[in-house]
Image (cartoon, rainbow, N blue to C red; front, side, top):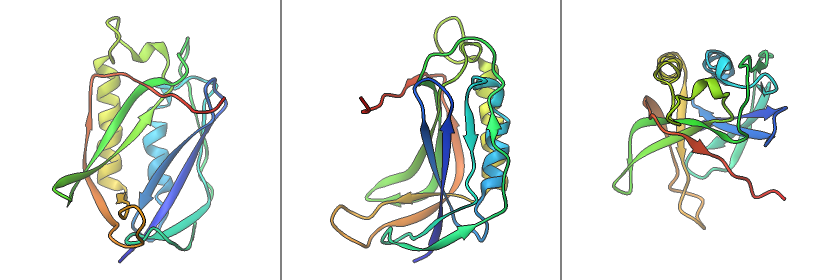
Length: 186
């Protein structure tokens, strides 16, 4: 049993928002500085109305049970504000798959971070991502994997408070595909 820091980033200021991205880190620090470097490298693909805010504190959880067992705190980290120009479609972008060496129930443990919305300049004329966009995302992801303390939390089985686990991110994958996020809000 280990403790993981749960880091919740708030995405605000854009049509279709707000949104959140949840990350887990396993070290002493929160990892917010490393996460800021990742998103700052991608700000040209986000509309100028979008702001990603980084917390100065959050919950720690027991990775086996998911039960909150403490609080982490860190210094303030500046928000990332999109610098992309032009139109964007609310909720449309791409994603990064985060890879681990973990296996649970005969399946690899992996995570996913959605990067949406993205400005029209991130997309090729055929509706997929520009190669330069994917390269930039890959470079930022590689830096986060190499310098960050990113983990993926595998939840315990439904109805139990044991059997969960944390797994260090060891790699990433990007795809030349587009995603569309939907909401249940009315």
